[in-house]
Length: 382
Ligand code: SF4
Ligand code: SF4
Image (tube, rainbow, N blue to C red; front, side, top):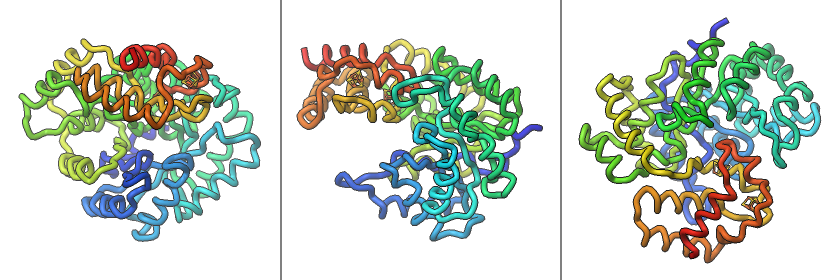
């Protein structure tokens, strides 16, 4: 059975509700509501959340701002069953019902096991591939589908193409997989975006794209790389190149963008409202920019925050790496130093890391966090 047509009627820009807009350390719901209205008003419809996003508030916020204000047929909602929060099989239906209630819906359009991977860590003490089988999570998904409470079932994934092949062979009930795909990671040895996409195609499952801008890395680029894009088309944003790249693939349900400002929203809906796939000439522009981009050694942190929970020193790891990348990409030492000083006046410094390793096991990008923190300390604290 092939599922690659699942998303054919869905516009190729999904609204990711992980990084919600903020104002003065609070979620800016007034702004988010305006953004939601523009997004839906332009005919877009797909929202992605999880019980763990937005400090566990994301599903509830979606319920209030979208489900309570729009007819059910106007939107699709995707949410997840975070495997690391489960201890017993009995918790699974409870979490599903909690999601339905928070989202204010009576069915979920795209329901997935959250973050399947074979990586074992302190946060995930057992392989959660095994855990999904052991707790009967797949059977639960199948049951929800049969009962019409989950329209489509699948999983979000951070691991090798080889492992993905194994999972899809063992679980042909999966209709879609959520993968990290962007032009920088397409041939990356760790993320294996191309190979994972090809495995999904081989099994006939649809793909939801996450991290099309690699956590913002492809939007905040060095001037010489940005110039490659700007010379070709002065008006097109850097985000538009990254999102259109992923949206041009076949068998895509949608491409998620974690829009947290009105500016990002207006830019995204502008070029995605009447989406056109990349031309061969545009692909060459990306190839040229990528060669330049690969000439510098940035930290491939997506800002997902999975490393934060287990850190005994409470280091703000993604914030520290963002500052380091800012210095690497822009060479803007003065600003990066200022930002580092500002951040570490309130939170621990990179040199406060005690090398316990909890973060490395939790990192879906498999980053050598400890040595990167040493590099951060050497850069800013020397
Ligand atoms: S290795 Fe360092 S940064 Fe990572 S969890 Fe331990 S103390 Fe925190
Ligand atoms: S270091 Fe890894 S886990 Fe932590 S925010 Fe970055 S990508 Fe996510």
